[in-house]
Image (cartoon, rainbow over all chains, first blue to last red; front, side, top):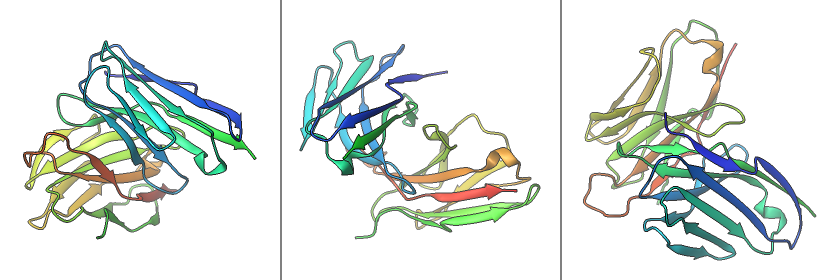
Length: 110
Length: 116
Protein backbone atom coordinates (compact mmCIF):
# COMPACT_ATOMS: atom_id res chain seq x y z
CA UNK A 1 0.00 0.00 0.00
CA UNK A 2 0.91 3.66 0.06
CA UNK A 3 3.73 4.56 2.36
CA UNK A 4 5.26 7.84 3.42
CA UNK A 5 8.86 7.71 4.55
CA UNK A 6 9.53 10.39 7.12
CA UNK A 7 12.98 11.27 8.42
CA UNK A 8 14.58 11.60 10.80
CA UNK A 9 12.61 9.47 13.22
CA UNK A 10 13.78 11.59 16.15
CA UNK A 11 16.14 14.40 16.88
CA UNK A 12 17.57 16.38 19.77
CA UNK A 13 18.36 19.97 19.08
CA UNK A 14 19.67 22.92 21.01
CA UNK A 15 17.20 25.72 21.69
CA UNK A 16 17.57 28.38 19.03
CA UNK A 17 18.73 25.99 16.33
CA UNK A 18 16.92 25.42 13.05
CA UNK A 19 15.27 22.07 12.36
CA UNK A 20 14.59 20.30 9.10
CA UNK A 21 12.58 17.16 8.43
CA UNK A 22 11.30 15.60 5.25
CA UNK A 23 8.85 13.15 3.85
CA UNK A 24 9.02 11.13 0.63
CA UNK A 25 6.67 8.88 -1.26
CA UNK A 26 6.88 6.56 -4.24
CA UNK A 27 3.53 7.92 -5.46
CA UNK A 28 2.39 11.35 -6.58
CA UNK A 29 0.02 13.30 -4.35
CA UNK A 30 -1.69 16.63 -4.93
CA UNK A 31 -1.96 17.70 -1.29
CA UNK A 32 0.67 17.50 1.43
CA UNK A 33 -0.03 18.35 5.05
CA UNK A 34 2.12 18.78 8.13
CA UNK A 35 0.70 18.10 11.60
CA UNK A 36 2.08 18.37 15.12
CA UNK A 37 0.91 16.12 17.91
CA UNK A 38 1.44 16.86 21.60
CA UNK A 39 1.16 14.11 24.24
CA UNK A 40 -2.46 13.14 24.90
CA UNK A 41 -3.78 15.25 22.05
CA UNK A 42 -4.84 14.78 18.47
CA UNK A 43 -2.72 16.04 15.57
CA UNK A 44 -3.00 19.75 14.86
CA UNK A 45 -2.61 21.03 11.31
CA UNK A 46 0.42 23.29 10.88
CA UNK A 47 0.68 23.82 7.14
CA UNK A 48 -1.24 22.62 4.07
CA UNK A 49 0.35 22.54 0.62
CA UNK A 50 -1.81 22.30 -2.51
CA UNK A 51 0.52 23.11 -5.43
CA UNK A 52 3.79 21.52 -6.56
CA UNK A 53 6.70 23.82 -5.78
CA UNK A 54 4.65 25.80 -3.28
CA UNK A 55 6.55 27.26 -0.31
CA UNK A 56 4.36 28.22 2.63
CA UNK A 57 5.19 29.73 6.00
CA UNK A 58 3.38 29.78 9.31
CA UNK A 59 5.38 31.84 11.79
CA UNK A 60 8.70 30.07 12.35
CA UNK A 61 7.55 27.12 10.26
CA UNK A 62 8.17 26.80 6.53
CA UNK A 63 7.10 23.89 4.36
CA UNK A 64 7.59 23.11 0.69
CA UNK A 65 5.71 20.85 -1.71
CA UNK A 66 8.26 19.13 -3.93
CA UNK A 67 8.21 19.74 -7.67
CA UNK A 68 7.87 16.01 -8.35
CA UNK A 69 4.84 15.90 -5.99
CA UNK A 70 6.52 12.98 -4.25
CA UNK A 71 8.09 14.81 -1.35
CA UNK A 72 7.82 17.66 1.12
CA UNK A 73 9.95 19.18 3.83
CA UNK A 74 9.27 21.17 6.97
CA UNK A 75 11.68 23.63 8.53
CA UNK A 76 11.42 25.15 12.00
CA UNK A 77 13.58 28.17 12.64
CA UNK A 78 14.96 29.23 16.02
CA UNK A 79 13.47 26.29 17.93
CA UNK A 80 12.02 26.81 21.40
CA UNK A 81 11.02 24.29 24.11
CA UNK A 82 7.35 24.31 23.11
CA UNK A 83 8.35 22.91 19.70
CA UNK A 84 8.73 19.55 21.41
CA UNK A 85 6.33 16.98 20.04
CA UNK A 86 5.81 14.61 17.14
CA UNK A 87 5.57 16.03 13.65
CA UNK A 88 3.71 14.07 10.99
CA UNK A 89 3.55 14.54 7.27
CA UNK A 90 0.35 13.39 5.60
CA UNK A 91 -1.16 13.24 2.15
CA UNK A 92 -4.73 13.17 0.90
CA UNK A 93 -5.10 10.23 -1.44
CA UNK A 94 -7.55 9.60 -4.25
CA UNK A 95 -10.15 8.33 -1.79
CA UNK A 96 -9.95 11.59 0.18
CA UNK A 97 -8.46 9.86 3.20
CA UNK A 98 -5.30 10.85 5.02
CA UNK A 99 -2.18 8.71 4.93
CA UNK A 100 0.38 9.63 7.59
CA UNK A 101 4.12 9.22 7.79
CA UNK A 102 5.72 7.56 10.79
CA UNK A 103 6.48 10.85 12.50
CA UNK A 104 9.53 12.79 13.63
CA UNK A 105 9.89 13.13 17.38
CA UNK A 106 11.44 16.47 18.21
CA UNK A 107 13.17 16.91 21.54
CA UNK A 108 14.72 20.22 22.50
CA UNK A 109 17.47 20.71 25.03
CA UNK A 110 16.68 23.86 27.03
CA UNK B 1 -16.86 27.54 18.80
CA UNK B 2 -16.36 23.94 19.88
CA UNK B 3 -13.85 21.86 17.98
CA UNK B 4 -14.14 18.15 17.40
CA UNK B 5 -15.28 16.52 20.61
CA UNK B 6 -14.76 12.87 21.44
CA UNK B 7 -16.02 10.75 24.30
CA UNK B 8 -15.00 9.09 26.45
CA UNK B 9 -11.42 10.35 26.80
CA UNK B 10 -10.16 7.11 28.30
CA UNK B 11 -11.57 3.66 28.89
CA UNK B 12 -10.41 0.20 29.81
CA UNK B 13 -12.08 -2.90 28.41
CA UNK B 14 -11.53 -6.63 28.70
CA UNK B 15 -10.74 -8.88 25.76
CA UNK B 16 -13.89 -10.02 24.00
CA UNK B 17 -15.96 -7.03 25.09
CA UNK B 18 -17.58 -4.44 22.84
CA UNK B 19 -16.86 -0.71 22.80
CA UNK B 20 -18.58 2.36 21.36
CA UNK B 21 -16.70 5.59 20.82
CA UNK B 22 -18.44 8.87 20.00
CA UNK B 23 -17.51 11.96 18.01
CA UNK B 24 -19.16 15.31 17.37
CA UNK B 25 -17.73 17.24 14.41
CA UNK B 26 -17.15 20.95 14.12
CA UNK B 27 -20.41 22.78 13.51
CA UNK B 28 -21.05 22.92 9.78
CA UNK B 29 -18.78 19.99 8.93
CA UNK B 30 -20.60 17.09 7.32
CA UNK B 31 -17.74 14.60 6.97
CA UNK B 32 -16.30 12.53 9.81
CA UNK B 33 -13.35 10.16 9.65
CA UNK B 34 -11.95 7.72 12.18
CA UNK B 35 -8.28 6.84 12.68
CA UNK B 36 -6.44 4.40 14.91
CA UNK B 37 -3.08 5.42 16.32
CA UNK B 38 -1.01 2.72 17.93
CA UNK B 39 1.72 3.94 20.27
CA UNK B 40 4.77 5.09 18.33
CA UNK B 41 3.08 5.15 14.92
CA UNK B 42 1.17 7.56 12.73
CA UNK B 43 -2.64 7.41 12.62
CA UNK B 44 -4.16 4.74 10.37
CA UNK B 45 -7.41 5.36 8.48
CA UNK B 46 -10.42 3.28 9.55
CA UNK B 47 -13.61 4.89 8.14
CA UNK B 48 -14.91 8.01 6.45
CA UNK B 49 -18.56 9.10 6.49
CA UNK B 50 -20.33 11.87 4.64
CA UNK B 51 -24.03 12.61 4.89
CA UNK B 52 -24.58 9.38 6.84
CA UNK B 53 -23.03 7.23 4.14
CA UNK B 54 -19.75 5.34 4.30
CA UNK B 55 -17.38 6.86 1.77
CA UNK B 56 -14.24 4.91 2.58
CA UNK B 57 -12.96 2.04 4.65
CA UNK B 58 -9.41 1.21 5.63
CA UNK B 59 -7.82 -2.21 6.06
CA UNK B 60 -9.56 -3.16 9.31
CA UNK B 61 -11.53 -6.32 10.15
CA UNK B 62 -15.32 -6.50 10.19
CA UNK B 63 -15.22 -6.21 13.98
CA UNK B 64 -14.91 -2.50 13.33
CA UNK B 65 -18.05 -0.64 12.26
CA UNK B 66 -19.28 2.92 12.33
CA UNK B 67 -22.24 5.08 11.55
CA UNK B 68 -23.10 8.75 11.17
CA UNK B 69 -26.27 10.35 12.49
CA UNK B 70 -28.48 13.09 10.96
CA UNK B 71 -26.73 15.70 13.14
CA UNK B 72 -23.40 14.50 11.60
CA UNK B 73 -22.09 13.04 14.85
CA UNK B 74 -20.61 9.57 14.57
CA UNK B 75 -20.02 6.38 16.49
CA UNK B 76 -17.23 3.84 16.07
CA UNK B 77 -18.00 0.35 17.31
CA UNK B 78 -15.50 -2.42 17.90
CA UNK B 79 -16.66 -5.93 18.74
CA UNK B 80 -14.75 -8.84 20.26
CA UNK B 81 -11.91 -6.64 21.46
CA UNK B 82 -8.36 -7.90 21.15
CA UNK B 83 -5.29 -6.74 23.03
CA UNK B 84 -4.02 -5.29 19.77
CA UNK B 85 -6.97 -2.93 19.60
CA UNK B 86 -5.39 -0.87 22.37
CA UNK B 87 -4.72 2.50 20.79
CA UNK B 88 -5.69 6.14 20.58
CA UNK B 89 -8.79 6.46 18.41
CA UNK B 90 -9.01 9.78 16.65
CA UNK B 91 -11.96 11.41 14.99
CA UNK B 92 -11.50 14.09 12.34
CA UNK B 93 -14.11 16.33 10.76
CA UNK B 94 -13.83 18.18 7.47
CA UNK B 95 -15.75 20.14 4.87
CA UNK B 96 -15.07 17.40 2.32
CA UNK B 97 -17.88 17.26 -0.20
CA UNK B 98 -19.16 20.72 0.61
CA UNK B 99 -17.77 22.45 -2.44
CA UNK B 100 -14.62 23.92 -0.91
CA UNK B 101 -11.46 23.47 -2.94
CA UNK B 102 -9.23 23.32 0.09
CA UNK B 103 -10.66 21.22 2.89
CA UNK B 104 -8.76 20.57 6.02
CA UNK B 105 -9.11 17.79 8.53
CA UNK B 106 -9.46 18.84 12.17
CA UNK B 107 -8.82 16.17 14.78
CA UNK B 108 -10.29 15.67 18.21
CA UNK B 109 -8.14 14.79 21.21
CA UNK B 110 -8.99 11.13 20.84
CA UNK B 111 -10.19 8.27 23.00
CA UNK B 112 -7.46 6.22 24.65
CA UNK B 113 -8.66 2.60 24.63
CA UNK B 114 -6.81 0.02 26.69
CA UNK B 115 -7.77 -3.64 26.28
CA UNK B 116 -6.65 -5.95 29.09
